[in-house]
Length: 171
Image 1 (cartoon, rainbow, N blue to C red):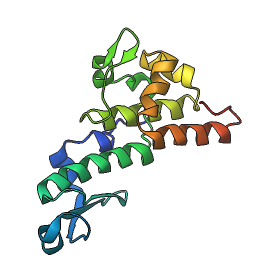
Image 2: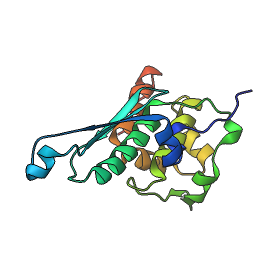
Image 3: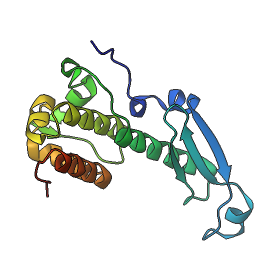
């Protein structure tokens, strides 16, 4: 029996940051002298997995930190698979986001990385069969595909995995 542990993408920001190394850097480009003199770029590395994310497009270090944290959670959702039992799906968070078989979440919402990780974990359990995964998650197949397309890397990963299982890629 596999023990259920939280996916790193579902950790609170405080808990996640305790597991990360933070580097501040200077970046050139638009933004004037302020950007060139101050270390506004942020690079976060999740120490247990060595997965990283960065942000440098904002002039504020605090804004770049928030962007890098969200990107790190997305990268963790894409690259870390949790080996959980099917009985643990769908989570309460997932159930709270399903209304009439539709997944109600914007790709910029704080819940998105956690939900993305869960969808990919279920797809792994269901051997990349989208219909079976959607049934387990309580959504329609088209809604699950639409949800995954919100993060193009997740949709590409799904199709890569489907091809490796001799399944047709989705469009």
